[in-house]
Image 1 (cartoon, rainbow, N blue to C red):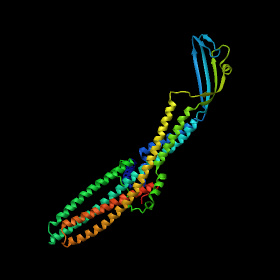
Image 2 (cartoon, rainbow, N blue to C red):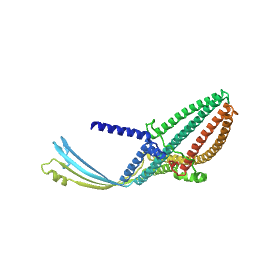
Image 3 (cartoon, one colour):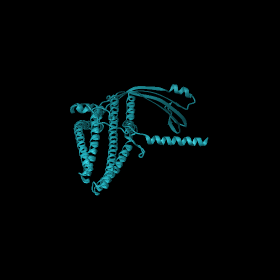
Length: 441
């Protein structure tokens, strides 16, 4: 039975290991995992909880307070008896207790303003959390596309190297047949070595890009981490056909930067109103109940509690007259903060406008670059095939053939680079238009 248990555990561990190694992360999985585990996002979620606490405190300020008190003492020497209210020069015990309640009737509407501020604070923190999630999604998408690019780049380089090795074999046959000089193979061997170096460099770049995404996801399984091998087509997006002004209008609704800045202005205005409330008088009501007892040969404990109790009901008015310019300074400081937040709002709107127009121009230029790279690749393929045919019949030397091969490789790499650059820039424009960044097809 013990052997069976050990065997079962080993099978589970092996199965878990194989499962972990075969795991292929999709972009949506990466984004969801990053959002759930990112430390900054968790801290921002704590800010939301603090906002809830502040709201509860603001609601509680409308409610009356209730406090109880009790004291017991042993008095020696000349002490006032709390029951007879006379001095006694002897040791006696005494006890007192009471309940007191107070409620704010008017304090310049500070309670109401604090409640409104707590609601605004939660809205602002929600916007900050959403912005943080958007930023994480953009970062993950960029890293994800970089891995896909490196994978395709590596695949192209390996395929091209296979072609070079075939050309090496063919050249050796031509040399053996006396069709081409023996020195022609050296150029191809140099090309093969260069391609091997490029493959090693791209493999290292691919590994680094995977590690970068792992670190964003807070994963430590660098050696086993991999993403799903998805063939992402060049997006056909209708968003880039929209006008820049239409994209900007959508961005103001979808992107959280402006909303955060607007919330900060509203919070600053509320702080000014709260600080001004200190100029106004405050009015509160109170009610209290007290009773007392002291050691007495005449009255017992219960009798004294009922005989010597009392209540107090009243109003308390406080009128601010002078407090060393403290209130005036708070109001001025709040006004400065409001002005600062208004400037920040204006700057945020300008930044968003600049970013949207920049993103729009970038995607247009990226599309043109991709289309130009495709045309260049087609021309390079034709030039390569023509050079290869001439080389195979001895009408082209090895150096020219090698240069044509390198030019084809560079054209293929440029198509891949411009393709993924265009894809990411399309996603940025779509993001400004309110389309989730994780929707890659």
